[in-house]
Length: 288
Image 1: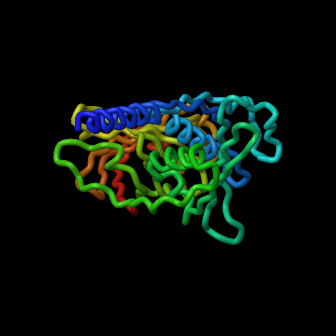
Image 2: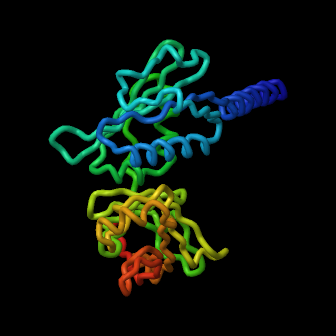
C-alpha cells in the first residue's frame, strides 16, 4: 500500500511540474501591424495600436513592436525575409468583403519557416474594434499551439452590464453611441480608447478618462491633430483657418442611466461675429 501511494504521489508531482512548466511558457512575438486597402490612415492606426496594446497586456507574450520596419498598406509587399526565425511573427489583414457590408480579418502567424492563418468575418467594422481582448489572445494562442486555422470562438455578447451606483468604467461605456448634431456616431472600446465618426465622413480618435476616483465624471478628449472637418459648427473657411491651432475638443459627461450620457462639449463656435471656445450642452444615447 505504501508503495502504491508513493507511486501515485510521484505521478501527481510530475503532473503538477508539467502543468507549471506549460503555464509558465513565454512566447516571443514580433508584431508587424495590420494591412488594409480599405481603411483610412486614422482607422488603420487606431486598430493597429489596439492590437498591439492587447497583445502587450497578454500574460506569457513578450511582444516587440516592429511596425515601423514594415510600413506598407499592401500585404503583397511585406518582406518576410526580414522576419526573425527564432521568434513568432504576427500580423493581420483587415478588408471589406466585396459587395457586402461585412468585414474580414485574417490573422497570420509565421514561425520556423511556416505560416498559419485564421479567418473571421464581422457584420460591421465596429464589431472588430468592440471584440474583447481575450478573443485576440485566444486566436493567437490557438495558432501557436494548434498549428493551423483555429476554430471560430463563440460569438461574444455585446450586452452591456447594468449601471453601477458608485462607479463607471470603460467596460460599462463600451459600445456605440448616438451623439450631438454633426456626429454620426461615437464608438467607445474597452481599455479607454475610441473614435468619433462625423456626418461629413471624418473620423477622430478619442481617449476616455475619469476625473474622480468614483468615475462619475467622464472626460473624453480628441487624441489626434485637428482638421477642419471636426468643426461642423463653423463655415468651411473659418474651420480651415482655426483648425491649425485649435485646442483638442473635449466632452465632459455623466451617466444619468445605463444608456444616457449628458454634459457639455468644449469646442469652437461662431458667436457675435467671432470664433470662440464655448461649452455646448450634449446628450449621448447608446445604440448598442
